[in-house]
Length: 311
Image 1: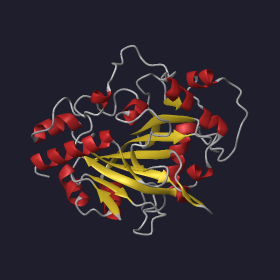
Image 2: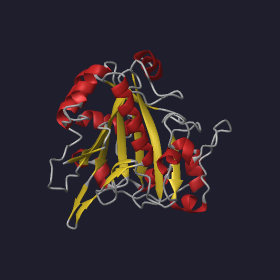
Image 3: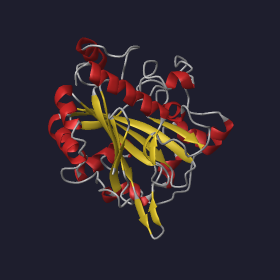
């Protein structure tokens, strides 16, 4: 079973706990990530060649203050260890997919292919984005940790990709991407084992390797805690040049694109200021379908552009 927006540019799958439809494993042969790719991705995010153990389920004593951890681009999630399911390839499933003609719109919708080429930088930012999430099986049912990876594949041949997309078959879309598309970047949303802090990070694919990409504030991670959320004060340092963005700005793909501003600001846009509400697309805490206002707006823009451009 799957849930499509009316625009048909977005797909959210039923979780593996739901017997109404097939689940889509994310890691393994002919999957979104091979086992080796999965391992290299996590190593690039948190470790180096000499330190490959992700401390799954382990807990450390904290030697630094919260502020010091943030200053050093470290965070409580890393110090306290991950949930075991995050480190197990078999726990990860495809929760959703979306196709977008251009995710860096420059103030206007694309009305012709010339505008699209300029906006997408000849296909770099025309993409199919795949969201994968871990699922834990327990004696009380499935648990859906606050963790997700968004993998963006660039589409130099949007016409061909759009034809494959219209099949609405996950395996066919994934097979096409692995053979023809170009990996562009990975975004991480990761909750701590104790759910007291959330962190965001981004990798770019360069020269066959995943490389950490600096965020607008200059570091590699953004971090937000329950206490910060409740107080309305975020301690991750922001650059002086970063504009103050309102919910109206963040919900408008013509005003703000995903490579601008803070990750958590966009994830929180249009939502009540409550903890554990950072999921943007995919499955919520109980396995329910989640599509945020921002994602719906992007899906509607993409649908109109695909129609206007004859795809």
